Image (cartoon, rainbow, N blue to C red; front, side, top):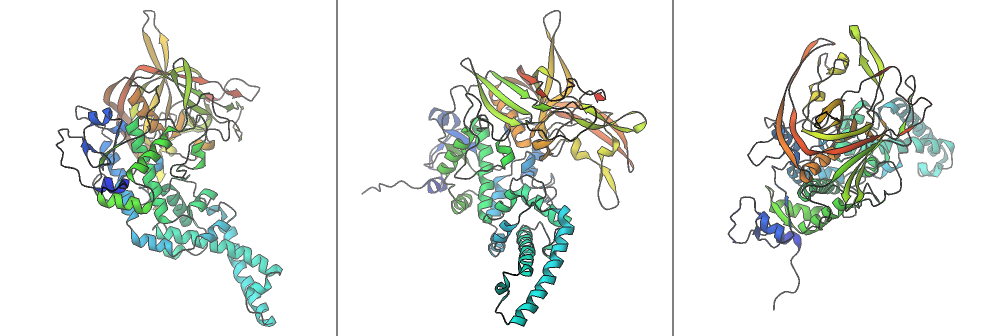
Length: 606
């Protein structure tokens, strides 16, 4: 009799390819093991997802003529935590996922197979970490040291009391003030120690520093753990970090793989709808893969009218289930069957009807609450700036996404004779367009940028130029991609003239500041979202590939020495044809003054 049960997804994808003749070089495997060409896959309603090791987002992909952005090789190296010459990066240089580089699946494969690391974590009870009642960091160093001294002293007192009263253990003294004070200090010590032990397992912290204290080394290690697990990199043991430390190390690796799969699915399907315009992102296999600040634009606001639901989450979950990625063990089976990756043809939910090769898109940037103070004053902004992307869906403006962003504020500016003052950097208001899109953009520091901002302390007695901030790369001021804001002026002959005032929508290496910070006038996005936006435009807007844009920039920087800044490219350019309309709204100006402060300066790129 023929078996009535169907083989599981992971077994089907683990099988060798069936002996069918395939004539296309970019074939993919169906769940039944049959190899299929892209045109056949499309006809069968399948989406080809590249799970290979040479994948990059569309933004950095090779063009049909074989050309590609210069940064493509760097992207692939960073995705594997390697330098361009193949050497492993140290922890301070790797972990670029938060900065717009999707890790290679080889990273997840290697981590999931690291049994020594898992055994290290298995030996730790993480429960004491949950007892911690504050987001402890280096600035709590002295208070924690005092608490540890108090803990030791109280322990001696309690032991003396126990012996004097002939009690079996210290718990018998639980009603005493000394015990309560000791217990509070001991809970803090044990919670910090357990967190440090987890950091030691990740090789983020030397074992000798796992002593229940809180030094800069522990804070730095906490940030590395946050970067590894896609949490806000604030160097603090905040609630989300403490909760992540409760999870099994294999589960954390599984979530990394799901995030990698999500970006591959996004790129293959051309989706951008993540639920931020409606009810919010939905769990994938019961897991929310992003930290809370990335899941909402302005807290608990009501969904926008006709906002698109979370299509990315649904597509990623469908892909994971069809691949058989149901848990860490199943994922490891898949990895062992495909050690070098694979292209797969998956049955994903159908895209919405409004998706097409060229969509009628527009964007609105709401500047939120704006305070035009005469002098810099710290303000707690309740209504933060947001960027919303719309599609004309049969005459209805449907919001696709709504993401947090930034506007200008007070910034340090270099003036004559090298003096540094604070001036207001304004974000232009009114209609603009996204015409020029740059992959791996560089930042050309304007003359107003103080020299001190372009030099870094190497903490070994030397200083060097901050080449990372100039780019290209994930830690550049513009992040991984830049959309220039051009103002359109009609000439007498009816032609359009485009003016760039230095404002753009772009990624940012300053991840935490997007939640509550400002900019030099630009509208910064989380780097991975900026890449998604650019990818979506390239997938759904007609455009011209301009290629590498030559640039000649030289500047002498004098601070803690003399340095020469050199930049030879502005980035790999694409031109939207036609441009995408962008309307920057004035927002809700909270001060009686309705124009920028007198001590203001033209906005320049971050």
